[in-house]
Length: 199
Length: 170
Image (cartoon, rainbow over all chains, first blue to last red; front, side, top):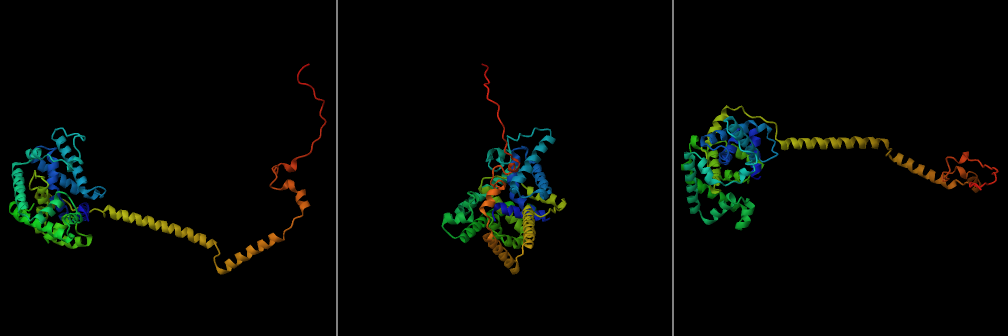
């Protein structure tokens, strides 16, 4: 089961009426979608509103999702349409389709521009998260740091990581989990563990 | 539990395990772990958050939303269509085959009868002898004749031709 299959499994469960499955998809893609929409809607408060609206529209449209494309491609298309309609409703010009489309959404790395689009609170949190994760990464043993880097940054599968690190897949599985847990131990106080701040 | 969530994020869970894992994913602790692990991944990829609290806000709105109940996924419907198509093909082949089979006498007696018929034809072919003069007399009716269709109507015509004259004036 790959990343796309995991999404598809969650979508199927959401389509059968399980809202928790859709919440997991929201937790997974909320940052990515927020970054995407911040390029269209510059005001940080409006970005949050449009992002929420896009997720709700996607939830309502779930019965029409047939799985022909990846879930995030479908979600991004809805988000872009939501942002364009929002801008039109607000009397502002929506960007042209040649200026930006959902294919661009997965590749752009305009972090400086995004920092200008983030709310001060979100910007501060983002900096704190980045600093915490970086510090935790520096403290990791080499084998754990290499494993999670190959997985999260390079996007390699467990099999590929096992080949690169010359170790069994079970060891890769364990190293990635231990790395995540070690970083999460530092990050959880920042994110909060109570229900209101769980995301 | 967290180890299985980590594997789920990486797609290292099969469908059977997903069902048992799903029970644990219902808890808020599992949701927090899922979200935390994804936050770590986004931070490592240098993808800063531009919003916060979106997840909770969407969850609150989802409570008010009517529950989505969609028909089975496309993969299931495709499988069903394929199954129906296959069943229709098998049925068609069965009907045609049965019809053809019923027209053929495939019993042992039928095979024996067919064998006898072949033998009789061969014997008759060997016994037929046609006199050569008969064939010569009726050659014009033979299919090999190029004038088969008009041959019976042909008659010999004799005429006395007038003396030839030159077409050119003298």
